[in-house]
Image (cartoon, rainbow, N blue to C red):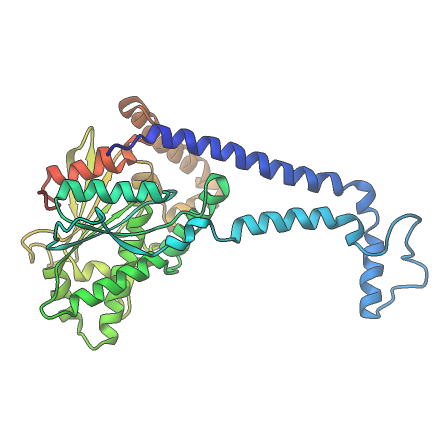
Length: 384
């Protein structure tokens, strides 16, 4: 089953345009009702408020002028209505929310078996059909059943994208759990505490990689509460869990990414042997960096926690590398100009290179044409 990111990009552009039109209409409503004349009547609003509180400012000073109601809602109801509409759009649940965190096995109705058990969480702005296609394609390539944990989208258009991005930031930087992460954390705990423990392969794509990494840290915390020692947990993770974060905005060494921390002052890398694979061209690896603590390298026969990213993937390079030091450079007038120039050059390199070689500015963020084939070709996932 194919995936045309060009069509997705066109759909996103059209959705953004439609959403902007809606927002523009709301803004016009506001602008038409906030005029110089209405602003000059703020004294009438103050009079209304003072009447409510009993704190009169002066007899007759704030008397309403002819034809203008004392209640501020008499002329600002459209402003309030516009604000309410925007708030509802931003904070209301999308119809897709009922799937969020739900776990389903694909292909449906087929018992292909799975040892180890494969779990996958999809990326941002992916509807139900797109999520199912991702799970089925992965299952077909591996020849086993795949357990999809639905990462539902906040909706189409700019509002939906903003809601999804807010969820990304909230989870990655603030550590706010998502429903998919909670579901996967429960599965990890259940499988590792089985007798004998069950082996798992966890795949997180794009935003899904944030959720997978957080799920692992949440499962570690739960194992600690259940009485497992750090060494016991490390042994379980090293022997039974393999993690692949692809097209990921996660940087293992970035202190802003709080989901990689676990209670007790340890870092997620303490429990795994980690490898960060940077690929270029059309899937040819040119650099591999092992991120593990001093003295840890070589303890396992191979890395069991991979972050895999393409050098021209905007999400997996530019977004991934944003950190506290970048915020400091941006805040300082002395370094802001150079930083913005460097950032612009990196964004241009990713977008232009991806467009020229892949036919789309986000071609190298593709799961089907970049990350899944690469994992299979490198033997990082079990193929049928």
